Length: 364
Ligand SMILES: [Zn+2]
Image 1 (cartoon, rainbow, N blue to C red):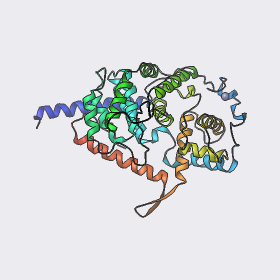
Image 2: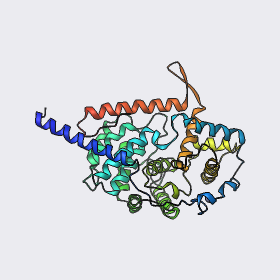
Image 3: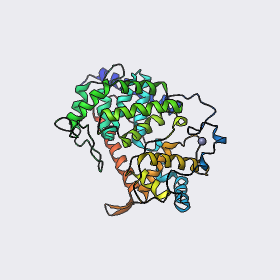
Image 4: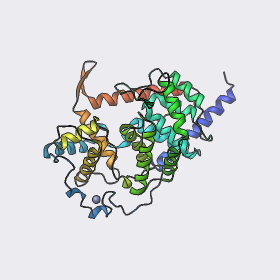
């Protein structure tokens, strides 16, 4: 049992840290400032007002009037509560963490690794592992602490998530189990030169389509170096966070990752009247095409919308059409997803309050 003065000191320190995080959040939800005032289209390079990209024919299929109207109505109706990136609790939580890390002088690789680690399992509950193993003043995470935290997490994978892990040259899983596999991946990634280059680029801020191309090249290289992990779906989840904190400017987005079989991909197929399978490069092109059409509609919000928000809302649109039953209540897949996420978030807050970690999750 700590003494009264020590307890007071802990309380005071925690309050100070929390206040600092709050001040930063009020100043800007984005950590990185952007300098580009006159905005060019990342696809054609001319000013947004003169861009004619909406006239280009889609890479496949045709934009269907009925579904497109329905999607625009969905956007106008706040997209079921997931209209913008910051509406997702997991994205918001990671942005809070990045704010605090930056304010306390966290090194670029630690920021990069924190986001990759969080997205690896994509669980709010694994957040505690990041907070406890990555301290701002240090050059690298405390690996032992990270491994222990992973051991304490009962289920690493999110409900309904496809397990993904680092594979060896013969396609089999590296290591004895998921935890060993994860630790091996994390440690090797931390030392990889392309991960370090990407981390440095992100902390400086990616502002042009050319810089974005370089990031894409580095991520491709990391994906081929670490087979089984950092695929399109994870890459999209990483980009969502980096776009939200403005480490990647939305004006630099030449295209955006869309994984086959996801809600975003399925929605694109509905919108373009495609019944067969579609490759990832084509899905990326369809997303860009749709973005330019949405940009001309009343649902577009110039200050916040980007390829990232269009991808996010397409996923929500697809899930909003799925019907399921939970505890005798009929709801959509989207509503159930939000419910699960909120429950996980509440559990995490309780968990962090009970632990000795000096971290406070903001009221929602
Ligand atoms: Zn254009």
